[in-house]
Amino acid sequence: MKLKKSHIISLILFSGLLLVEPVLAEDNVTSDNHPMGYFIKQEQEQSQQASDGTSNPTTDETPNIRARSFAAVPAASAPSNLSSTDNSLPRQDAVDISDYQNWMVQSDFNALKSEGVKTAIIKLTEGTSYLNPSAAKQILMAKNAGLTVATYHFVYDPTKIQNEAAFYAQSAKALGLSTNTVMIEDAEAPSQYYNWTAVSQVFKSTMNKAGFNNIRYYTSQGWVSSGVMNASTLGAKNLWVAQYLYGKPSNQNLKNTDYGSWQYTSQMYYQSTPNLRSHNLDTSIDYNNIFNASQGLQDVYRLYNANT
Image (cartoon, rainbow, N blue to C red; front, top):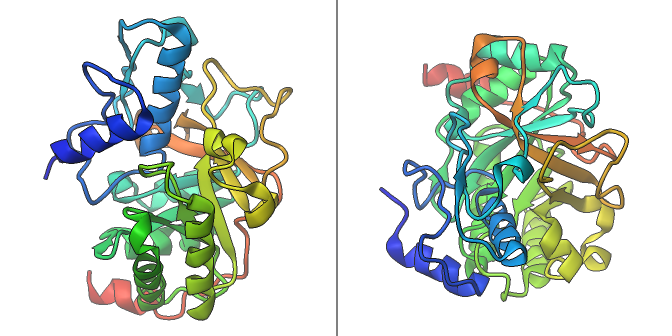
């Protein structure tokens, strides 16, 4: 199912920008399964367009589900494709993956570990019904590689956050994840005009009632700086902030250090396997070890093996 026209129109209206051709992800992103950062990259591209006052799009040629049109962003100033072997970059502490990375095999997870990645953050759920069909396999491979596993839930409708959080918690338990697992709210879907701080507090309280106490929040730098996600209320060190710089980020000029973690690229190419060299991954520096908690697999091996 393609992204619904009504959903696209809502995005344009909520952004306050009238675009002749809205910036969209690849056509095979479905309306109930968004990759992390889907709306954040659009937000940044539209903001760049507004500040530049230009309208001629250039195209990012990255061969991946995350590739998008860079509306009104000159090619020279677009976020760079990055290589994991570039020692000038920020640390590569964590990657986040979803079913769009169902191409990953055990050797890819092993390679990430060998290149210095510490944590795999795996999408479990979205809304009140979508469960990542690759989650059990991805959790198993990440743990087999010696990576810490954290998970995230993509909030589809903030007005139903209590039901969404309950579904997320139920799904995590069904997969055998320990209640010590770091559980992350992905707060980016339209619209910023909801009280996202209050939504996030309901998310946390619902997760806490289900026994999960290591709660973090993923959102854009723009939403944090504008107060849509209130750092004082939610805890600055609990925030995982996405900001993709136009140009190459540097370990000599780190950003968002007041927060727990910074997702600085969606275009990292790891070099240790053919799969990783040909597919880009979101990558973050974890300033405060916010993704690490005592993990337990419980029945995930049994559940995965029963389905293979």
